[in-house]
Image (cartoon, rainbow, N blue to C red):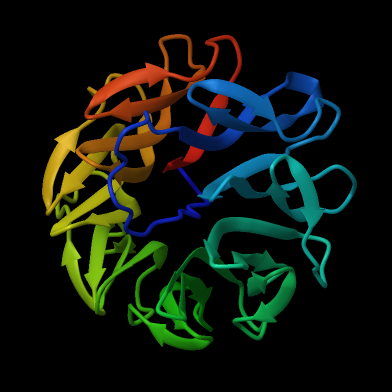
Length: 324
């Protein structure tokens, strides 16, 4: 499943005149040389790292003016290094551990925000300066960041003393628990529209099945309550009065619009929808689907119709889509 989600979400006016550019972030497998961080623009791939770097991943993309930002990590040495790329140029994000990962990037004015983790600590970097969102007592991660009216919203999770993950929202550094910590839960994505804060993720039930969740201003709604298989909500985007959520249920990539579900794949092979972005009347979803040979193929769905972004000879996954 998408473990980063990391997803950048906010409201944008529809594009007019020129055809919009579609950016997608992810990785492509290079066998013994590990994974290469990739950025696709209108279907054309660009490598953010070279083939000699092991397990480099781009997990989030954001475009501001003419600048393209991507966040992720690489494991070029014995350390895992949180990375921010601006127009393809990499910056190491300051960390205090040997394992740091960047999951989400968001730009507001001249400020660049990156959410992630540094060891066990949920982290927010603003213009490269780190801020601890948790104290490191228990494992925590910041998975998504969004800025609205100078308020900074970050979602993720933190484990408790029982070892259960609790879905969390940090607003300007102040933490709020979205779940009670009895069952595992994580908050993967946040979007702010006016006075409303939308968050998506999952929470397990008493039987141990994951239920896809949408929280609006802290009040939760089940997107699916079928308990025969797991479901995860991974990305949220608000356009006008419509709330779009991307995710997966069992093997099926899903898109929910105002709670009504649409299957993006037929369930024959494993698939997931990791990120959703709405531009004008068009709905873009990025994700991955396995083919008949067991290879992960990067996909972009536009208004429900899929297009392959990657070759079918190498595992490729994508996690974030942005339309400018």
